[in-house]
Image (cartoon, rainbow, N blue to C red; front, side, top):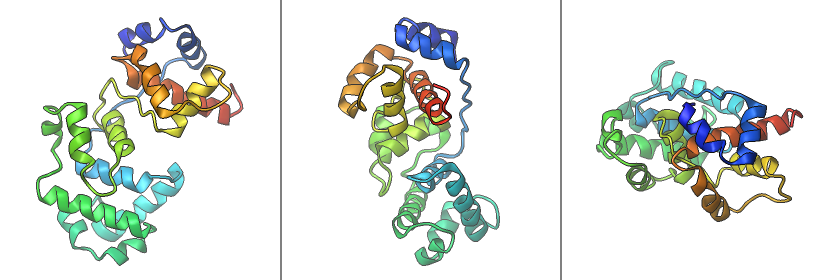
Length: 206
């Protein structure tokens, strides 16, 4: 995290305490091809990291001989075959649509992403079946390293805010959107700390 981002967030006394308690949080963007990043994100939807990793390995073995498959290979495989790797019927349909969109040129390359704003990428990619706001936000944060993304619908971010600020209930997404304005243009760093606050609670350390 940049010193500028930390200094900005520390102007909020509560966030300053969170940063002091958690310490440095490091995150290096993966910079995968966006096609690959979207398929990863869809497979991970509503699953634990371990379960998603198992399905991803089976998926790659089935479609890509152990490597991540090309859009053409994924588009060609039977949807029901994908279910043998552990994908639900809906996810099998979604990843095939991502492959078709990649072949059609709808999904931008990494270089093209660099020329598009967060809002432009959100509008473009959510036109793909199965790709919602959360999925694109995960791509923006963890794959592209965009600095000002706050996933207000993410349960972990909402839970982290509730814990850090001592609230009785989870903030509504619209409420968190308004609150997060004060963290801009470093809302990604704020999100990373709120996720860690939620992790600390699960680990019994908060």
